[in-house]
Amino acid sequence: MGGKEHRGEEILAEILYLNVGLPEIKNWNGKAEHSAIGKKSVPEAFLSKEAFHGDGVAATEFHGGPDRAVCFYPIEHYSQWAREFETDLEPPSFGENISVSGMKEADVYIGDIYRLGNATIQISQGRVPCSKISKNNQIGQLLKRVVETGYTGYFFRVLEEGMVYSDSKITLLERQQKNFSILRANQIYFHRKKDFNAIEKLLEINELAADWQLNLQKLLKQKN
Image (tube, rainbow, N blue to C red; front, side, top):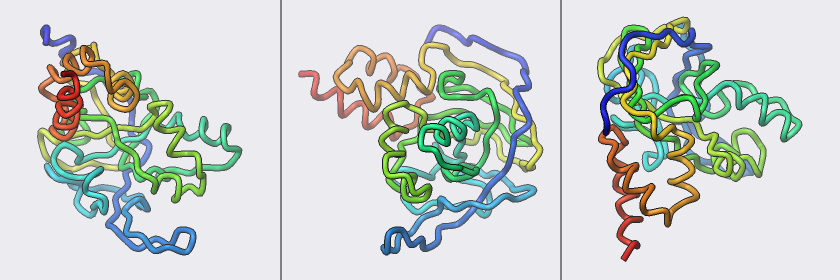
């Protein structure tokens, strides 16, 4: 990629909450499912390379692991979904660990490096949502709309472990590139699966999560 776009420190916001939770049994429509979407607010948690201490995942194909250690969901989407579906939604209904205002999918870029409390984190991929989003919020069309809009939230990997507090600030340290925001990457990943030129350019970003790289490379094999 053509050099780094930003260096220095830019305080974006104080996080609005810090949530962790381990998988538990949820009963949705009379069916028991294992899920970690029901997280609880905590005053502090140590963030390791794998996850916040006290946090876990059930659907390992979509969540968890070094590239998906921290789940973020933009706070602005809550009011949008509440208006659209005429219902109240309370964080962290999307199973996120943290949120702030001003960091929507269009505002951030794959490879962005941030300071979060005493930890350093990097955006790795957009979230690939599953049906538990709809089930947890009791909105049948929510998953469909999240994918259509690209308002999925996103994941961070951990570059430097450290303590994070419920009032920690998130600070932009470095922007690797400004060609692929999370929103643009989501549009390609979910809706432009035959846009091979865009897929190839997205794959040039070394900071992209390994799982996304693998899935995009599979799409490229359809080129011929």
